[in-house]
Amino acid sequence: MKPTPSADQTTTPRPSFPHRRQHPRTPVTTTEDTTAEGPYLKIDSSGDVRSLAGEVTTVGRGEGADIHLRDLTVSQLHAELVRRGPYVYVVDLGLSRNGTRVNGRPVARRVLKEGDVLTFGTARCRVGGLPREQLRPDLELRRESVPDLTRRELDVLTVLCQPALSDEAFVAPATARDIAEALVVTEAAVKQHLLRLYQKFRIPEGQNRRTRLANEVVSLGLVRPMPEGTARWAS
Image (cartoon, rainbow, N blue to C red):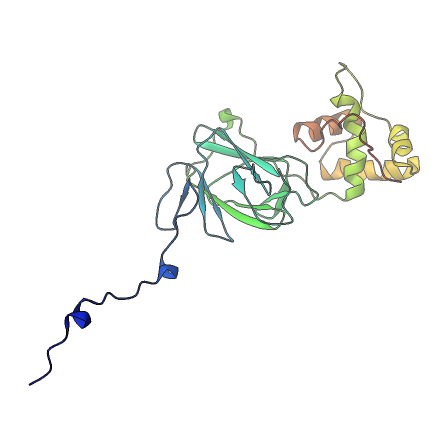
């Protein structure tokens, strides 16, 4: 006869393995198999899906950002995702040299469509849950892209637009001489930069060309007023 197992052998529990348990993720996330309610942002590095339920969702490396990205190329406060009904647009806050891109193109502000790939610095995300429809012209949702700009071209645009960002009304943008003095370069060099910028932003020849360029740059949110007491230009 086979020996009868003892009570100790029959009641000994199996060892547990805590490391196999799936820990819950942070709030407002879902798994890949779960469909988020409304617009959402999926973070490539972690697979987390973050709901864009609020009117404004901040993105950045700072602990206070709504969507916290652990990437050194991301600014503390990098961008905002603004929701208007079922639609969402991204706004680069201009606080990072690495910028924000949509489908590989740098943007200052752009309306998003289903499946767009957003890159904050080098952190990649994908937007989903948006209406699959052609945006009607009467919605006035502009799909704008910003041309590739060099650091010096950004400096020229910043000086050009600073008068327009002041509290005074009807102020003309800076002249080529003003820009040259601020950047400590020759006026001829500034004019060459302006000619390239007119081409990049598709500003046709004609009167008030500098003003039209400044208006386009300001409307895209590429430049902002400088804080008082900030040293603007390096030598």
